[in-house]
Length: 115
Image (tube, rainbow, N blue to C red; front, top):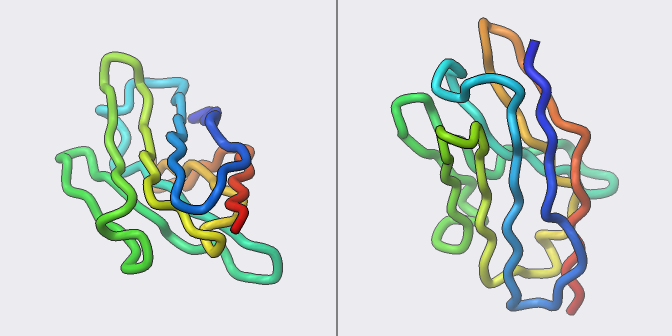
């Protein structure tokens, strides 16, 4: 079992920045991959960014060069630094972990970008 707790969402103006945090209940070095997904109203949940246990990262084309995923193994926390935010980034952001071939999700945190 993996519990994931997100924080850091909020309301920001277009062009601003936010940093999301996801604290895991176990050592993230033992987790195959962690990432962030988002879901806007009326849309499907989509991958935003992911980081594998070996450190490889993957980003959606829409956020490349604006968002950065990173992790702090000592704190068992994964971060998503979001810069140059756009109104279309507005969504609920979910932390995800792939552990022992099972998927785990956080409760989600709302990010709202005003124009």
